[in-house]
Length: 467
Ligand code: UD1
Ligand code: CA
Image 1: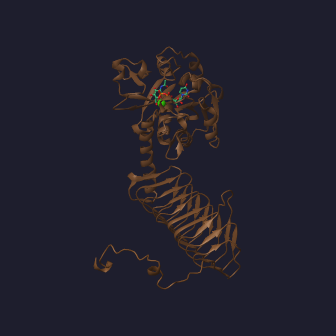
Image 2: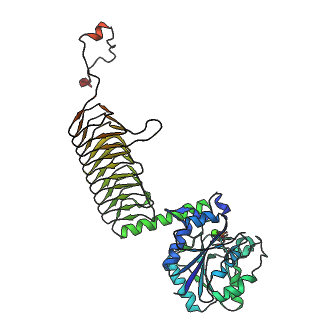
Image 3: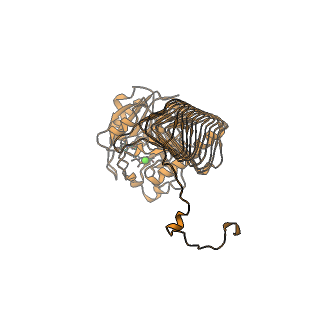
């Protein structure tokens, strides 16, 4: 491996994104574009990675603070050549240097390795990565002589009509000798349509010394540059396919890859099945033999083995093995759900612990609660955690039965083996094994309807059995 040092250009404003956020921080399948580039460059063997920051430098540095890269600052964005110049002091005296744009998120380590091997074998001062595009618009064009020898790169804005018809484009990635970089970078001028110092002009300088070569990428998708949001979506689509295919090759069943959106950061065990119209994001880990049925959204969560989830939303939660969730459950952030639980339809959880074997089968809100093992939360139970000003917690022991349509008004504690009768509003501590019952006692008055003349008019003659 030749290029031990890499310079990643990430100082541009990205005007064409029309965004307050620096372009390279726009995300593709859960990772920023520049982070995709960094990970592939590192995987290809570069040990020292220098990111040139400028526009939104603070934001870019912060986003990359965990990536183990160094930063060079380009205060004024005077072009890609000027950007590399800002990193020159940090580049070793000798050896090969990768120069890669931060807006080419689909590049892979394999291609970078082949590219630098090619560079090394060619003995060139500079090798540029190129690709053949049917529609080359927007890219710099590779200009060759009659014998196919590399001459220079011309930017679209500086190109003549015949140069514009060239379909071999500059991918914006270069392998350069450090010495050549050192002597040629200060010689760049900004005598062009954009009045910028172009890194691409190094190609002509190397060609003059018979030291320029080009390596054509096999997969054109990999070198795609992202300058606007249409290209961002196109790149995301390709990345999504890659992630899905990687997971399938690792033993995950994806029923409909076209409608499945899984971030590059997600880890999924084998024999897990993912249904259609599902989105799995962020720092999520899913175990073995899990079923994520159709229509789920899962974010930053850990789902243990043999769980099944259907048509539900799960955020920042941990779900223990063999638990069933859904359909139509909503787990807001901060839940620790035990093993073999049941969370049924229209149950909402927030910031709660739910012990193993506990069940909330339908229509309940469990917020800011610590519920023990083997409890039963009936239909329509509400943990009233908010008094209009502050949130309070509710504690429920093991094996507690909470009858349907009960309210637990926090802060309140219900001890082990207690029984809450349906319709009770619990405001007082319930002791171990006690019954808590609080209802309006129902009474009946014979003939009351006719006495009050309130019998309802008959609109339908037949009984429902006649239908
Ligand atoms: C550049 C190339 C073009 C190539 C294309 C590939 C030049 C002059 N042109 O064009 O030949 O086909 O990439 O995608 O190099 N940047 C800085 N500082 C600056 C300007 C840019 O750090 O002063 C960074 C940007 O953040 C971006 C990268 O360099 O990550 C490329 O800049 P961009 O403006 O997107 O160049 P293109 O017009 O795409
Ligand atoms: Ca670009």
